[in-house]
Length: 112
Image (cartoon, rainbow, N blue to C red):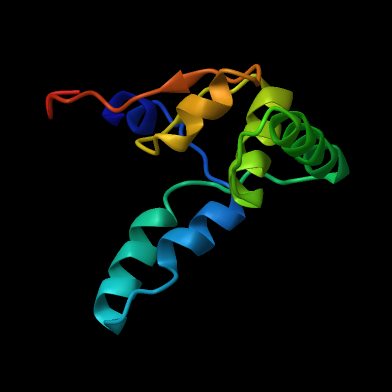
């Protein structure tokens, strides 16, 4: 992950930023995380991203696989841009069985 950050290849979606910052009770922790996240540019989402997300939702639901709207938006935006998804969220493994997404897991080593 450090390599992605050093090379300026890590980006974020606005809804992910919101999800990460939501629910933080201490203002100092919120501000610290907010400031760190500002190093990552937001991907500008467009109509096609939302349409792709809805298509992915429908495809997965028809196969009995559930996911959040944010998860499907991440998948749609990533596929449209040919980006991999860096995640520790196991839900994406289920989605990857039905969607053309590429998943990356953080390295277990801190030497990254």
